[in-house]
Image 1 (cartoon, rainbow, N blue to C red):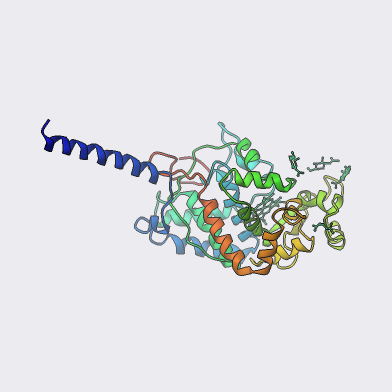
Image 2 (image 1 turned 45 degrees about the vertical axis):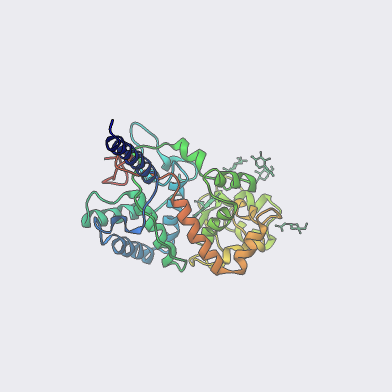
Amino acid sequence: MSSIASTSLFMAILSLALLVLFTGSTSAQLSSPDFYSKSCPNLFPTVKSKVQSAIATETRMGASLLRLFFHDCFVNGCDGSVLLDDTSNFVGEKSANANRNSARGFDVVDDIKSAVESVCPGVVSCADILAITARDSVTILGGPSWDVKLGRRDAKTTSKAAADNGIPQQSFNLSSLLSRFNALGLSNTDLVVLSGAHTIGLARCTSFRPHIYNESNIDSSFARTRQSNCPSTNGTGDNNLAPLDLQTPTAFDNKYFQNLVQKKGLLHSDQELFNNGSVDSIVQSYLNSQTSFFSDFASAMVKMGDISPLTGSSNGEIRKNCRRAN
Ligand code: HEM
Ligand SMILES: *[C@@H]1O[C@H](CO)[C@@H](O)[C@H](O)[C@H]1NC(C)=O
Ligand SMILES: *[C@@H]1O[C@H](CO)[C@@H](O)[C@H](O)[C@H]1NC(C)=O
Ligand SMILES: *[C@@H]1O[C@H](CO)[C@@H](O)[C@H](O)[C@H]1NC(C)=O
Ligand SMILES: *[C@@H]1O[C@H](CO)[C@@H](O)[C@H](O)[C@H]1NC(C)=O
């Protein structure tokens, strides 16, 4: 072989190797917010106006939409799987313990998806719509904003078991909460800061009954107040609601952390974050600075949104209807 031929052979192999390396790495990563800037230029305003009107109709919806994104990302990554209805082939996540009689906002997501489909059909994934919707909800309720990375594709299947094993439970102690978050690449700080999402929204009596009746790390007058609308017996009043943040339940602020320090966390898992344990100082830092809460919350949401997305052209799909695979 001439030296020119062997050089060009070498160059060809090198560029092939680089190509494989390059596409291999990008197929596992999300892109910047402008992923749809050509294919769906009006995506952001379309989603935002829908989220705005849903929250104007019912303030709690902002909380419900934020929680949907969390539940999506903690089960097989952020792939829109939480939105799938059951089929004859699988029982989905909506029946899982953490979601049954609890997860809400599916109709609003359908409505947002329809609006997006009408401006750019078949282009934007349900997983990305959830990510944008969560950000808009937080911002509209007074919290921070952030650039949402995009390019996720939608799962075609899921399972109830995956959700039962993936979503942390309110009965977990601190070490179980930490290991669930750490297993997904989220840090101890991420656990605390993301739990700050409980600055908005409501919980059912069944979720906080053991904490308000049977635990000692709770302010006694707060416990009595919550007991008044949550009977001690299982079955009665299970669905009675109470705000997760007793001070400002519809505003995204750092009052949640003040509650924890005063032993007024509603859920067992909330109070675990300030119970003479290793993350007490992180709670204290967000109580001292809403600015650092906001900036860390924004970064942690981006990090959570990065949990094993489906990307590239052959993984997953762009669902037409968020409730079912195409
Ligand atoms: C750390 C582990 C977590 C546990 C154990 C937990 C548990 C819960 C429980 C039990 C409820 C009440 C559900 C009901 O009674 O119907 C709830 C509500 C909520 N959670 Fe969490 N959660 C956790 C983390 C998060 C994270 C990371 C986010 C978002 C970033 C989040 C956002 C919300 C919101 C916004 C609500 C209120 C939803 C509504 O009003 O519809 N949670 N959570
Ligand atoms: C936390 O819960 C796990 C699982 O139930 C248990 O094995 C562990 O001993 C508990 N840790 C503490 C510190 O209570
Ligand atoms: C409180 O604990 C007792 C004893 O373990 C148990 O029988 C009861 O069901 C618990 N009550 C609540 C509301 O968790
Ligand atoms: C009441 O419900 C809780 C939560 O669902 C459960 O852990 C507990 O065992 C139940 N207690 C009784 C006495 O049935
Ligand atoms: C922590 O420890 C102190 C001193 O032992 C105690 O007074 C307090 O109730 C404990 N729990 C919390 C949540 O601070």
